[in-house]
Amino acid sequence: MKLKSKPFGEIEIENPVIIEIKEGIIGFEAKKKYVLLDSKEESVFKWLQSTDDPDLAFIVISPEVFHYNYKPEISEKDLNSIGIENLKEAICLAIVVVPEDPSRMSANLQAPIIINPKNLLAKQVISTNPQYMVRHYILDEMQDSIFRQEKVANRNKENIS
Amino acid sequence: MLVLARKRDQSIMIGDEVEVVIVDIHGDQVKLGINAPRHIAVHRREVYEEVQKENIMAAKIKTKEVSKLDLLLKNKLSKEK
Image (cartoon, rainbow over all chains, first blue to last red; front, side):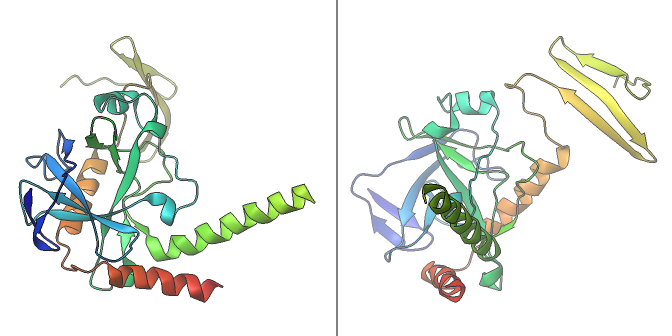
């Protein structure tokens, strides 16, 4: 399949995995079909490219990359709408905003995109936990996340010894 | 629109599943407690607008190379060590 993409121009995809966001991304409700594109180099970021509109693409990141123990609370209705019972069955991605100063890039942890890998249905859902906001600064939180991971690792070490 | 007057600790029922309790009243702010089953999502109205605004900003992305962003992450990591 030939696809016009925002980051790479026209590209050829052999076995396109088309994700269907029935209700669209909030603010872009008319566009329902997307593909996930990898960058040429290894990256923690991916592109969520609309197949309906070459100019519509989002940078997405897995929240675990920078945020320790991400556990959004999502309503049963939202989970069921993509055919899952439990969030563990879904792939969770956060949309990234890159401002003029890219070191202030942020990710939306309040409204992740959840994808059911079995039927490729997806939805942008809103979590009800108060600690997740629309703007989490990735570089700042990564620092905190590493610190906390190390703390847990050290605690486990102490428990073993 | 139905308008009801309620006092602190009083509540209203929406259908037979959703209860809205007036938890506290302080000046021009009202604290509401909501008892609803898990399949019903409860959000502040502004949340949708905030998400929409954030999505529109995300879609304005000019960068085509995420490698720059990866580099920022890597630099941050190496500084920590």
